[in-house]
Amino acid sequence: MKFCWCTLTVKNMEDSLRFYQEIVGLPINKRFTAGSETEICFLGDGETKVELICNAKNEVLNECNSITLGFEVDSVDNMMEFIKEKGLKIDSGPFQPNPTIKFFYVRDPNNIKIQFVQSM
Image (tube, rainbow, N blue to C red; front, top):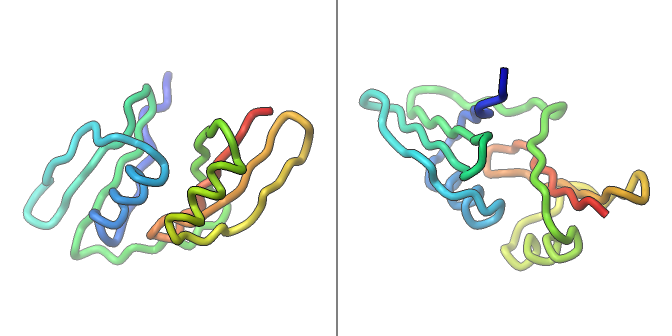
């Protein structure tokens, strides 16, 4: 068995795409409509994808603070500077719980916690 994707229900597809493309760096893999009111977009070029679903009829509730999506970066310090330059707020961190890892969190446009991680 292998993990295929993580699905995120989003309020606004364009805002979410801007975040995941410009900030996280994920390219669009597939984008299509699924019925008259639903749009689906898969992002990422690796084995595991992030799926965004936007449906104008559905209320989006992303209040789960116990789930985060983690993305590896070369430098936490450089990524934090990039986040600030883009006008985004750092949610928490940086943290370095041991000498081999450093990370921080931001929130995406749907209030989902995104973790940027550097292996030291």
